Length: 402
Ligand SMILES: *Cc1c(COP(=O)(O)O)cnc(C)c1O
Image 1 (cartoon, rainbow, N blue to C red):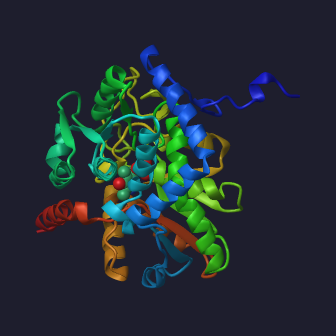
Image 2 (image 1 turned 120 degrees about the horizontal axis):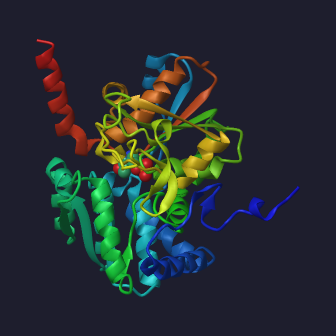
């Protein structure tokens, strides 16, 4: 029996998604949804986006067989999709180039963005420089302190970094301020959101701009080793790198695993494992899973990796969890650190701490699988930005071990 409620609603993934925003933003979201749909149907737009991905981001990114890491784990073959080799060091540039092109198409001259670790801010500032757009990036002062190098990079690229002094002074607060700016400025300004979060059309749009990862990976796996992987593993902050590699193979017979930040333990405030430990709620314009306390207040979060340190998650992931299509798990700070050292010393690749969560989960699984099975890890970014922090942690650890 079919009822009206069986029809997919625009902007919804099952019960998740939607547009929970003030009336003043509805017009900007409608305009964006219309423009995005038209752009996706426009062969010239797609050709220009392909050119930007190739010439600016450096795509396609490599598909790499991690031979020594595979030998160390003793089990399934481990392959890495090398988003760490993109210009600016992560997958985020895929999305900011797409949204910058849309900004030009809408005839707007200014972009704004939120940033936590600063990676999305740097990718936005880069795209803005390439296309001559004015760029303001909101960033919590706590994150500015922790990620000083990325603040300097953004400023060098010609962007203005606007310090956010409210709340925990991290990503959630920066996102609130960016949305506030957009409410007053959306006639001339486009808000480049950095993950598959926020109100419709952002979750769909950001996923589409990240799907270059999964489309390439599918083609590359079929070329060599000659078949699709048995399992794909990706880390999940807001969920954009994971959605980008999952979505193009979602109808294939491939198991998928999203890895959240287990932080230093399961107590509220010690982690950022939103799907594993959170509950349904509304944050930043969409219904999804949220980490919240007993009063429904958004909870503080912690992770060794600033890029996973977010109390929300994209609504399509909530639906993939509900339907069982994707399995979600978590990896702790110290497991991620262990995987960082393992990948660095077996393959010569220093991963971003975010990506190291996916590596840790893949290593854990590989050992229980046979040598003719394949795990594909989305290596979402490189670890240059994390080297100082890792060194400090290792030093503290040595001291406490005497
Ligand atoms: C920002 C970031 C993430 C987390 O964001 P998603 O939207 O979940 O992909 C993961 N890895 C790296 C390297 C990042 O910079």
